[in-house]
Image (tube, rainbow, N blue to C red; front, side):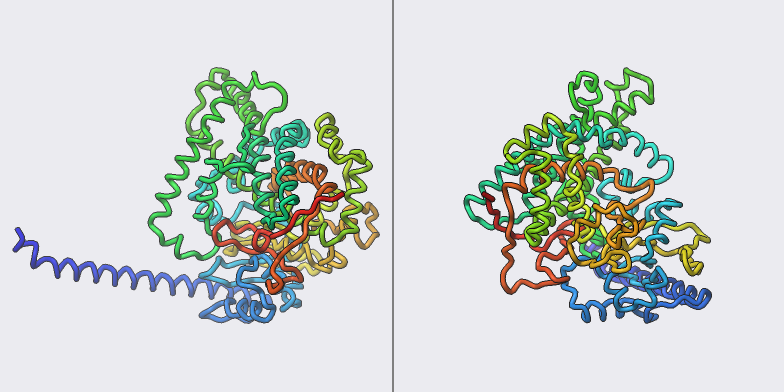
Length: 550
């Protein structure tokens, strides 16, 4: 037997080497074929439609152009990518002035059509809400939810899911959950008080993240996750799985054969954590007294729809699996972006004491002069939060300056065009990832006077002739149209509540090192965290010292 196997060894080795060689050759052939396809697509659009484009290389596309912009404007390596579109517009104002810029960044990213005109954004997001770009459900979120969640679904499945969860995310229902949220905010206040007493430097974004996780746990699941005081298994599992998601070229993740296995393991473990909540809620939702969580109302919608009250004890496994996927996306999106927003609000108030004074004066007027009494007043009457217009203006202005997400990406059908509302020029979109560059619009001087300044008063004016009055379709951190963020009301409620219970007692002071890099005029610039999903986060978690106010 050894004699038979022995001589075959070199033959097998040779066969393996040849196979690898053929596969490598096939891969290279496919790479250059795809490169030719993509590059020619841009050349044809330019030739057939006479559309001005940035300098384009047949070998590198627009990658060299992007690299030159990065160097010229000193964009830091960790600077968040959604601001690149702003610098492209600064470098090529005439091209961006047509409302769109065609961007060929393949193979780093997909062939792209960046849209700068808010009224042209409305054409594919509001007036005709096109499906999400195919890579979102099939690549980016495939391992996390299989693309079967409210963010990624399309068509009738999306409409059905949106309808099921709308009652839970209504402003009325969320206000009913405020007493539960207050418990979590009081824990946050205690943590701030300890930090102020100790004088230690804290990463503010870590504190706000733990808080928003706990609030989302109450609102979605009706349970205390207590991540502010100890590690939580559910959220630890989710954080580990989120690290497997990639939105840009990531060979270490894309070519790692263990990534699918890891996603399978995490999906199973997270399901085991969530399913008991779902089944218990389905079986007992009529017995739940007081406020109803988002999952409670969603399951009520489902049970009422099937009109089978025995279903509450025997919900189909495929439906439970779908609810698990929705909960995962809510838990992720519901805490991550709100935590970033909160951190930046405290930061901007510290940099603008006159605005902080106006905010605190509003709280004194609505909630009384004693900050320690605010929790009891709001618990008794959550609608008091609706009487804080300047607080809401601060929230909106902070989102304008620091949007966690740079825009929406959509898929266009064959023969689809965007039309410039003023020139009437039509631009082909098929084959390109359509990106609404909301982050650029939010700081565009064409729509916002003093675009880099913190001026909450923009959102207080009702006079459309006032230069500060927001231009139609220009404020879109939650996007617009039928697929706007379902959780925006939750953000409005929890942020106003948190500020009402903390800003009169505490303030923060940034403590970046003296030689820390600056970008866009600040050290707390937005970064891409390679260990997490690509929403924008404050640099270094925004290190601060908390100070108690007298």
